[in-house]
Image (cartoon, rainbow, N blue to C red; front, side):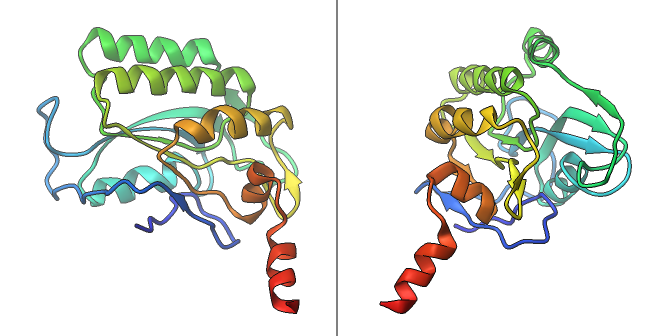
Length: 201
């Protein structure tokens, strides 16, 4: 099944999906916990200006009938493609505090986890702990990972994040939504080269 990425990009997306079947959530949100309505924990960026990260994910998912709980991995004035940006970055300890608060109130049952921009290895490692925690509560959790690494041949996260995504995140994710550059980083293949080789053959 092909799902549209919630991240706004100018480039075409490459979708990597598992064989899992996804069901559309009913159009009415339920307040009962746990409920039959899909519940999404969305860990992504937030910008004051523009529509990326949680600003581009939460509302569309709610329109589809999902109950969405956003965690902002960063809060920036604008996305990092601009010459400058200002803001705050959530660290792994702060993320885990939020998870503990949800668990203390029996609010940690989710059907889906969605992750986007993550700016540090420590935060990404904490996200992996969150995956374990959520799957211990709901083994059927679907983890949709948008591995935000870069675009048009340029990384805009620390280079060491690539290895963590490749070695730790890819094996536990249900679905990945990289763009072409990110797919090349994760697989080690240049897709333009592969396509060209097929054409000349």
